[in-house]
Length: 320
Image (tube, rainbow, N blue to C red; front, side, top):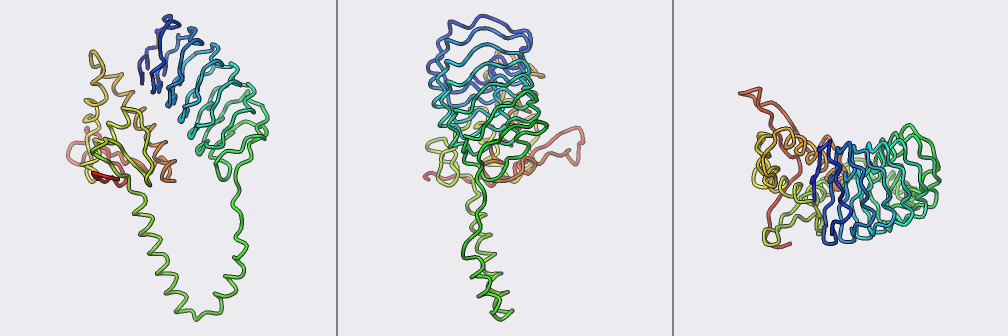
């Protein structure tokens, strides 16, 4: 149901009777629906894994505390800029969540107790409560799988934050330094250079995203990447052309093949959202900034044409 009603600002139909028991992707389903505020509390979302951007920039504010979201792994931006939303979510089982980046960013009304959530598997909390000015709950019981305070976690807000991991000093560090300082400088320098280049080669090798053509699946470090269908199509389009700049309009076809009638504005907005989602997911995965994922420029021969290139190494393999 990805982008099913996305950017349909006037949409506000009764969907309470829908059977959603087999739906996996709810990504951006109500993105930008300014009027939608119907009752979906009885929906069966137990198969859902991706809820990212579901109520992004919408005016939704109805109870969904009864939802079974135990299989969810991505809720990034779920209530981003949902300025009216302020419903209880204490019943949610988020124990399998990995990405909560920007989940309540700009959600200026939200202030519910979610301290009981199990967030031990969460690896990305960047911008989670950015400018969520009403939020004032105590999250000191949280122990996410995040080292250091995430970027803009509580920008322009103040509350008791989770117990993020800290980088512990190596107990043997002083001993190693003491031993090394007595080595002859040329030998030390040579050893350092050899060690650096070995690490550099290993890092480059590990940063490659592999595509298994038999399974039609992407892998990173042996782990299957669970991408929504649109993100998967876009990444696959880059696969065989990773060294080239592609015209941005070339992505319109794969991003509009599920529309009854192509709408230029809708496709453009969808394309921007897909590139944004991919930047967030891949930057968290590879420990890079979002700005390093894609390079966008004007064509050198025709400045009216915008082009894009992905900076991530992609490689195709029959087996993983």
